[in-house]
Length: 434
Image (cartoon, helix red, strand yellow):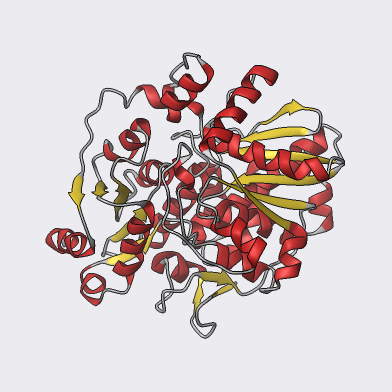
């Protein structure tokens, strides 16, 4: 398997090169040169497979020989070390809970997989890999946990000041060791732009071996396709065979893009719904066919506060840049904070289910799609535990949340961070560390 840049198809890379570089030299996102099809026998027997067996078979073609099979299987085992339960909500609606990992967010899988891939690639390299990552909330904590203590790596996490929850900030600022946190006076898009700019900076590339752990990196992005296989497997075990619709809370659009990859591999998915908050660049695009990103706005579903989602170009590529083909299998709807809080209350009062704000947005998008398409089975992704948004959830539902073990141990820790305002200050910060 090779990967090409979506900016210039002549810029090719193997899997290991794409992972280490993060972005192509022309600043384009890497994209697989082919989408393999899984065998019908594999898909038919999915309900009898373990999570590790599914993960190995799905990821093996994308790794393309860059990692020996035995080592890849071990990486998958270390990545998929927790559950992904599909929980019935009502009638033809379920939620796939993706928050049972170490940082209680869906990004744990991609972060753990990528960290272990880089650890393998760097075993024979005396020069450290420096991982730059921008976060709007959950990415930072997942990457910090995934890379903590991985030999030959240093992680620098950029996050927007005052725009992540208290628990999210603790998860990305209290690790120490090889994890550093930078608080940026701006929004997520500013953090993401600083990371992308760093990759084109000759001074930094001379001093560092840079890569990114955002979903722009293929090793962070592609493992998320496994979630959709796990949901389908559990639906098969439950005897549900209706057309399957996934509603995915979407910020940078990496998760839903990975779901579309799963469908291209052969997973039978009828439709995808990208559910967003008021950062509605993609919903507007589907209405006007004009891609016009706005600066991001702060919401109670902060991990989706992204004005210019990087991965949407990959989604377009998966549909060969055919707008009509995209609209046949893909919808996107936007919801504000008031609607999100109403959905939180409805899920709790009507079905005794406590969602987080992102899952509530996913539920809203699924409801809207099913109003005109009722004869399907809908799955919305619950991407983070409600405890990570304690203030919002407790206030909305008038409940007191128990603190899970994964969160309890960080509550008394003191954040360690460096406050910076712009790219020049960030560059100076990095060069002083070189």
